[in-house]
Amino acid sequence: MDFRRRMTLLAVTVAAAPLALVGCTADGKPGERRAEGRAAPPELTVTPSDRTRDVPISAEVGTAVKGGKVTSVRITDDKGTKVEAEPREDGSGWVPATPLKPKRTYTAEVTATGDSGATTTRKTTFTTMPESTRPQITSTLYFADKRTYGTAMPVTVAFDPPIPKEARAAVQRRLFVKTNPPQPGVWSWVSDGSQVYYRAPEFWRPGTTISVRAGLKGLPIGKEYVGDSDRRATSKIGRQVSLEIDNATKQMSVHRDGKLLRRIPVSLGKPSTPTSSGKMVIMEKHQFTTFDTRGSADPYVVDVEDAQRLTWGGEFIHGAPWSEGDQGNRNVSHGCTNVSAMAADWLMNVTQVGDLVTVKGTEVELNEGNGWTAWNVSWDRYVKGSALPVPAGLGPSPTQAPHPGAVAGGSPVPAPSVRGG
Image 1 (cartoon, rainbow, N blue to C red):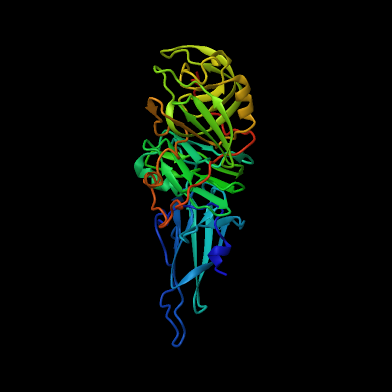
Image 2: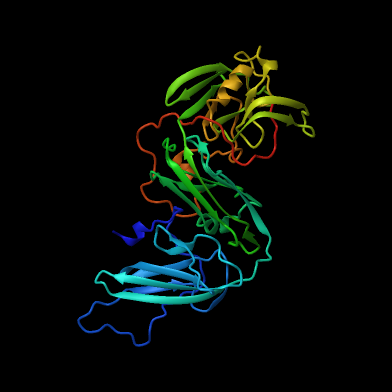
């Protein structure tokens, strides 16, 4: 069995670019020649090169082989302790399972084996840099551990300040996703660099396990910043649930496993504060919250129950007993989807963070990045947001995917800014 396949990297990347580590070494022995009648050993290059200093703590052991494949990698620190590492799927390197320590010396011994059985071993020793004094870019992983999410749940990483274009490829190479059963996807950046999403061409299959690693701690990001943290999370995908809201009929259709469960009258945003049309994802759920818009052009403070966030700008689905006479008839909200108190309570027991919500027929379109907008564009447009090459042949199947969604509760890291209405 292929060694690389047996040692599949816990975190899957979407591209096969070479490692961005400075320096390389073949560490070949002078005068090394092939004995007559024997097959040539494979050519092996390992990075960082021997005796390299000031290596970032995000460093990986890069491997390039001609005429064979890597069959053994052992990384140890200056105390002889083994450093656990996992191979990249494209074979370009081995990624330590946790960031390296600053001002420490590490040794990597790599062996490659050719088809004939001949082997080549290279050893490199390098020293990491002191603790960085550069400012950190704050990253937030909106994918929590041990949750159950809806089938439209994109893995989302947000950045403050945003990542500049020239640094996105390096950051993207440190974002890893593995799915079981396999359902490969692509990372795609919001144009301003404030968020990056990972999703497959189609909605996640119910029962899929998704493992994520954002290995950004100590990663040089441009000339000014470094990454702030190394985070992991593993969660599952639940049943398929989706909500479809039609402004023309003022009705919400709730589907589970492709079947209509219920239609609910709604009141959407009035003309001065319209609801966005587009494909959104439930971001968080609150049994009770307060909408506070003091300081805005239309200030108010109101307590609401059973609220489900759809956008960063403050569009929610929530119970609104004050507008029940308008629901199904006319729009009176500040941009939210108003439903009755009973309907809102029922929805909270049906929906899941990560369920798709489609709104159509309103006066304005959903803006890119206003929420988790990974599904609001076609696949062809979505993949243009990747900073790395996209695997050939990856795309939607010709058949229509069923309605996405899942059941039960749960919420990722609370999102900022509550507008509501």
